[in-house]
Image (cartoon, rainbow, N blue to C red; front, side, top):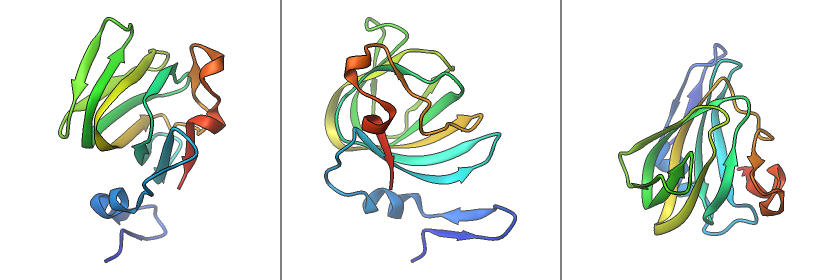
Length: 141
Protein backbone atom coordinates (compact mmCIF):
# COMPACT_ATOMS: atom_id res chain seq x y z
CA UNK A 1 0.00 0.00 0.00
CA UNK A 2 1.32 3.43 -0.91
CA UNK A 3 1.14 6.21 1.65
CA UNK A 4 1.56 8.95 -0.92
CA UNK A 5 0.70 9.34 -4.56
CA UNK A 6 1.42 12.82 -5.91
CA UNK A 7 1.45 14.46 -9.30
CA UNK A 8 3.51 17.42 -10.43
CA UNK A 9 0.83 19.92 -9.33
CA UNK A 10 1.42 19.11 -5.67
CA UNK A 11 -1.79 17.14 -5.27
CA UNK A 12 -1.59 13.85 -3.47
CA UNK A 13 -3.12 10.97 -1.59
CA UNK A 14 -1.82 10.09 1.86
CA UNK A 15 -2.54 7.09 4.07
CA UNK A 16 -2.38 8.83 7.44
CA UNK A 17 -2.77 5.58 9.38
CA UNK A 18 0.17 4.02 7.53
CA UNK A 19 2.31 7.08 8.20
CA UNK A 20 1.32 7.02 11.90
CA UNK A 21 2.27 3.33 12.16
CA UNK A 22 5.66 3.99 10.54
CA UNK A 23 7.03 6.17 13.34
CA UNK A 24 9.65 4.40 15.48
CA UNK A 25 8.98 3.59 19.14
CA UNK A 26 11.66 6.00 20.38
CA UNK A 27 13.31 9.18 19.18
CA UNK A 28 16.20 11.43 20.18
CA UNK A 29 13.97 14.53 19.83
CA UNK A 30 10.69 15.36 21.57
CA UNK A 31 8.79 14.89 18.28
CA UNK A 32 9.24 13.35 14.83
CA UNK A 33 7.24 14.68 11.92
CA UNK A 34 6.49 13.84 8.31
CA UNK A 35 5.47 16.69 6.01
CA UNK A 36 2.57 15.93 3.66
CA UNK A 37 2.63 19.38 2.06
CA UNK A 38 4.95 22.30 2.43
CA UNK A 39 3.44 25.20 0.52
CA UNK A 40 3.95 28.86 1.46
CA UNK A 41 0.27 29.20 2.46
CA UNK A 42 -0.03 26.01 4.53
CA UNK A 43 1.93 23.00 5.65
CA UNK A 44 0.38 19.67 6.61
CA UNK A 45 2.25 17.23 8.81
CA UNK A 46 1.76 14.07 10.80
CA UNK A 47 3.83 13.99 13.96
CA UNK A 48 4.41 11.72 16.92
CA UNK A 49 5.19 13.11 20.38
CA UNK A 50 7.69 11.14 22.47
CA UNK A 51 7.88 13.20 25.66
CA UNK A 52 5.71 15.83 27.32
CA UNK A 53 6.43 19.19 25.70
CA UNK A 54 7.44 22.28 27.66
CA UNK A 55 5.87 25.69 27.20
CA UNK A 56 6.59 27.06 23.72
CA UNK A 57 5.05 29.03 20.87
CA UNK A 58 5.39 29.56 17.13
CA UNK A 59 6.05 33.10 15.92
CA UNK A 60 5.09 32.77 12.27
CA UNK A 61 2.11 30.42 12.00
CA UNK A 62 -1.21 29.39 13.48
CA UNK A 63 -1.34 25.70 14.36
CA UNK A 64 -4.28 23.30 14.08
CA UNK A 65 -3.76 19.87 15.67
CA UNK A 66 -6.16 16.98 15.09
CA UNK A 67 -5.57 14.12 17.55
CA UNK A 68 -5.19 10.83 15.70
CA UNK A 69 -4.14 8.68 18.66
CA UNK A 70 -3.16 8.97 22.29
CA UNK A 71 -4.46 10.86 25.27
CA UNK A 72 -3.09 13.51 27.56
CA UNK A 73 -3.42 17.12 28.57
CA UNK A 74 -2.51 20.36 26.84
CA UNK A 75 -2.54 23.86 28.22
CA UNK A 76 -3.18 26.83 26.03
CA UNK A 77 -2.26 30.40 26.93
CA UNK A 78 -1.64 29.74 30.62
CA UNK A 79 -0.85 26.67 32.73
CA UNK A 80 -4.21 27.05 34.48
CA UNK A 81 -6.04 26.52 31.17
CA UNK A 82 -5.52 22.73 30.96
CA UNK A 83 -7.65 20.75 28.51
CA UNK A 84 -7.65 16.99 27.93
CA UNK A 85 -7.18 15.56 24.46
CA UNK A 86 -8.09 12.24 22.89
CA UNK A 87 -8.62 10.95 19.34
CA UNK A 88 -11.04 13.13 17.40
CA UNK A 89 -10.24 16.40 19.25
CA UNK A 90 -9.03 19.46 17.32
CA UNK A 91 -6.72 21.88 19.15
CA UNK A 92 -6.03 25.33 17.67
CA UNK A 93 -3.41 27.93 18.58
CA UNK A 94 -2.93 31.35 17.04
CA UNK A 95 0.69 32.35 16.44
CA UNK A 96 2.51 33.52 19.57
CA UNK A 97 0.10 31.58 21.82
CA UNK A 98 2.09 29.74 24.47
CA UNK A 99 1.11 26.09 24.82
CA UNK A 100 2.49 22.91 26.38
CA UNK A 101 1.64 19.25 26.73
CA UNK A 102 2.48 18.41 30.35
CA UNK A 103 0.99 14.91 30.38
CA UNK A 104 0.73 11.93 28.06
CA UNK A 105 -1.57 9.27 29.54
CA UNK A 106 -1.93 6.94 26.55
CA UNK A 107 0.61 6.45 23.78
CA UNK A 108 1.40 6.79 20.97
CA UNK A 109 0.40 10.46 20.80
CA UNK A 110 0.06 11.30 17.11
CA UNK A 111 -1.36 14.47 15.54
CA UNK A 112 -2.30 15.63 12.07
CA UNK A 113 -1.16 19.27 11.91
CA UNK A 114 -2.13 22.08 9.57
CA UNK A 115 -0.03 25.22 9.94
CA UNK A 116 -0.99 28.52 8.31
CA UNK A 117 1.09 29.88 6.79
CA UNK A 118 3.66 27.09 6.47
CA UNK A 119 5.59 26.33 9.66
CA UNK A 120 9.31 26.29 9.28
CA UNK A 121 10.95 23.53 11.38
CA UNK A 122 12.87 26.23 13.26
CA UNK A 123 9.71 28.16 14.25
CA UNK A 124 9.58 27.08 17.88
CA UNK A 125 10.41 29.36 20.80
CA UNK A 126 10.64 27.86 24.28
CA UNK A 127 9.46 30.10 27.11
CA UNK A 128 12.44 28.85 29.12
CA UNK A 129 15.38 28.54 26.73
CA UNK A 130 16.83 25.80 28.97
CA UNK A 131 13.92 23.53 27.88
CA UNK A 132 15.28 23.04 24.39
CA UNK A 133 16.02 24.24 20.90
CA UNK A 134 14.39 23.75 17.52
CA UNK A 135 16.85 20.89 16.94
CA UNK A 136 15.94 19.11 20.19
CA UNK A 137 12.21 19.73 19.64
CA UNK A 138 11.43 18.14 16.29
CA UNK A 139 13.11 16.19 13.53
CA UNK A 140 11.78 15.24 10.13
CA UNK A 141 11.16 11.57 9.56
